[in-house]
Image (cartoon, rainbow, N blue to C red; front, top):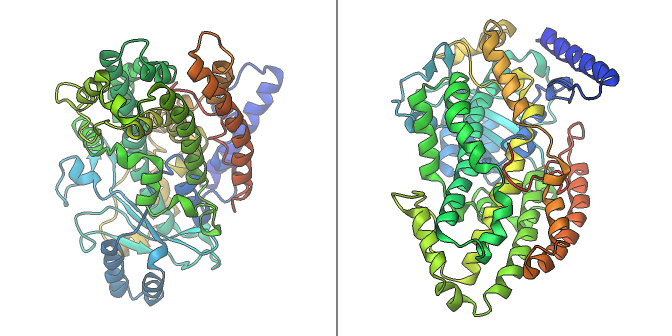
Amino acid sequence: MQALEVHNFRLHTESRKRSQTNPSVRDMYFSKNIGLRRDWYTDAAFGQQQFTGTNPTTITLASRRWIDEFMSVCSVQKRADVTKLLTERAESLYIQDYSDIRPSIGLSPGDKIFSEGRYGCSSVALFHLEPEGKLHPLAIVLDHRGSMQQSVTIFNRRITSDVNGDEYVDWPWRYAKTCVQVSDWLRHEVAIHLVNTHLVEEVIIVAAYRSFGPNHIVFRLLEPHWNTTLSLNKAARETLVPSIIIGMTGLTAAQTYAFLMAAYDRFDWKGSYVPNDLRKRGFPVEHLDEPKYHNYAYARNISRTWNIIRKFVTTVLSKEYPGGDAEVLGDMSIGIFCDEVRSSKGGQLTSFPEIETLDELIDFATMCIHVAAPQHTAVNYLQQYYQTFVPNKPSALHFSIPESLSELCSFTEEDLLSALPLQRPRDWLLMAQVPYLLSFEVPEESTILHYAETTSSSRATLEVIRSAAQVLTSELRAFIDTVSQNSRELDDQQTPYLVLDPSRTAISILI
């Protein structure tokens, strides 16, 4: 493992040196990745990635069911210390639950997730959000097979973040965390990234072109946020998914498409509005500035971004619909649009609501801009940093997952290395290159701040949008300082979290 770290450092150093003589030539190792950190493998780095990594969107307050199940395993493994914590701190226990992967792809609990020498897993990870705000991993189910009794569960030797221990050589625990990262790679790339941004936004775009005239205010308001999305999605269907993604995971082609469709069918339009989503997952927006949540910079930033966008949308639509709810209800184009999104012959997005009031129209438009701009930016542009160093977040394992806790506890460094594609150079290169290619920096002219600035001064823009964009520009500029301040307040100061800075946030799904 140390050799991999040294190799990564050497490649980065050499890339930097080359760029000094030829600044136009940069490769995937020019920019930093997490492997350059001496502590990349630690519980602290692993926990923080749930809050500010490539997928900061699914960490959820643990249900009573999960707490009880982990307590039952505590009893079997005689971990009274964990039982005490689970009993006393239930309101601060969070979970990353990937147990739905196997049923989503049509496998029974006993079936292995396997394809062409690659193994997938359906992990469950339990975390304690400590009073000072550190998210500390407590337990991991390597591959949930229908029940805890049929699965391998390991508890962290370090019950709290301030307990000392040689984390580098705790190979069983490091292997377990790798299983979680493999599970999250699948859910992030296929569900959170592809489905919940690219494909959901495509439905809105196609339905809007079919339902609204080019001068309709909803079309004029949203159309700037649709640049390149349809052509990108076409490339994803024809090349990225069938020729690349399917060859990177432990799923077959049929299982991959089943997982994709399951994610689409589960997408909850109104439940994904930022205030609703955060509250549902155990992060009430009114408490995000409390010390307990200070490390969840994604939530703090995305909540403020939602409010800024919603204010902009409210200003525009309130002026365009002076008659309020009655005027919205009387707009036939809106009704046609809603039917198109939900139709079994159209978008098939069954969770999409009826839009009958001005407030519902404002929320809808805010959501469309949110998905295309800040949300896609948050889950796309950090892939280079966290995933080009393959040991941090591989897309699959390369030997079978242990069948018992005793087998796992005997794991050494060699076992963890064997799980990585060291003997499969194609797999390794794809795991590194794909996130790099998807993470090119957003050009200045394609940011949401640039959109606001140009819109606020363009005579070609509708006056109502131009006027609202002046306020939008001011608020986005001020928000840059907020993003920087939220990053400075993180316990982890080695990796700044600036992806939602409006001068970096893409105006649409650009890649």
